[in-house]
Image (tube, rainbow, N blue to C red; front, side):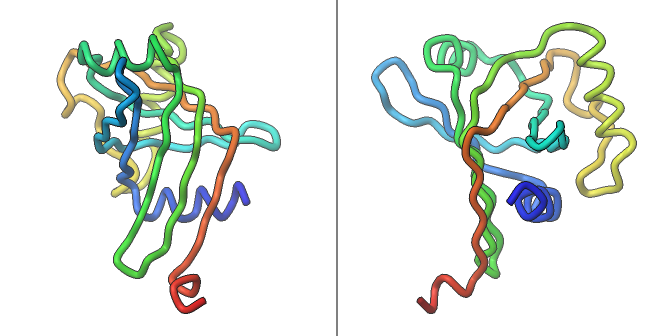
Length: 136
């Protein structure tokens, strides 16, 4: 399952990420994660802007749902615990992941500006599906 998820996620690249606000309403945004194999599991990393809403949502409820979809209806979903990783060694390591990866997964994080932080996402549930599920 982990390999299937990473294959789909790294091919599609951009995913919709949902958090929950203080009134228990979902809020979605699009991010560009890099998924790293860690032992038998997985950790997702993304650079993001620490907007007041995003910080408030993750402080109150430190979870995200990451959903990938493409026009052929290949889908990958990760339900994750989420936290900001603010230490410099992690930031440098994640920066290097993105610099070393081939495009479109790889990019130079400097394009996002100076006010970015690392979001760490640790999945407790992964799922994938392809267009065949539409036909039953």
